[in-house]
Image (cartoon, rainbow, N blue to C red; front, side, top):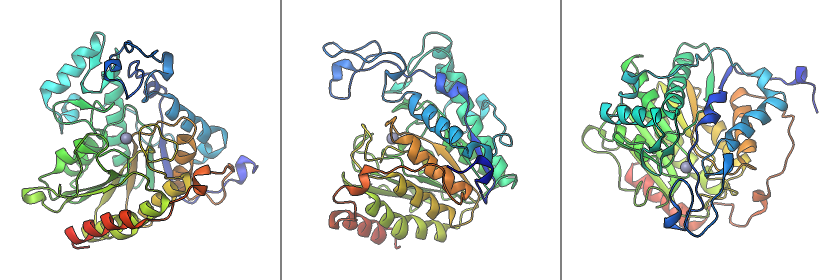
Length: 381
Ligand SMILES: [Zn+2]
């Protein structure tokens, strides 16, 4: 193990984590198999999980990722001070969300919490935590646009990309990345903002925010028809002025590092180069991991690292906003490799081996390449 002083990084990378993100409580649940169990408090026939491990979306994946980055020595090489940690104001949350919805979440948060819409459970006080998540993403955008940092990772919670204008969805209360993108347009005068969403689920909320807009390019690679159901198909390409500025790549289950590499090379990087964004925001979920309980893809930590390397290679100001990822074992390693890549770390202190590298079908398969080809034809890439 290298002494911390010998760890060498080449970029100024902001890293935003906050104890309060871990205090958001997303309820207690049994499994995704028994509809009767989708009630906070537990299921009818299956023993509910309890405590902090209660829900798929709980704080442990994020806390463990932050802790790994700390104990391996990397944290000392990151900038934890420049990005201002603050809650988004109500007006900022309303860049995307309706006032009625924001007020509703605030009101419920002052009581006992509840469900903000569709599988978006929260406990008392989560309004403030969700507003902090959105505010930190806004400030990370400011820091990279001010060139105070080369890039920034916001380990925010709750996640955001499913949250729609009028309702929370899929563990998400406020759409952190949509609000941050809107901030870049409204307050920083940016005319071209790109969002790359590699969470295994479709970023339906973010898509909704910019579906008719040509100033924000939204690219989502996700598992076909996972969550939300029937969302993120190939032919959802934007509408009106926004036609062609929404790009969906719905991969069949079983896609590994090879398929994601192909998507990056054939779709994401060419689209970004064509659009020429002034800033890139990444909806960085780690649930395409081969160990994730809520997806059926096979990406390894090296696969995520490669995707980070690819988007960083464009040398455009970039902010990563944490989204999903539900394997407490694997998310920390995936997150570590991404943040190491962002910082340009010469040599990692952490050696580990991903079993997923040995899985069959890690190379891009014909049925995955077929999807890539269809997307390329549709978007003239
Ligand atoms: Zn997800």
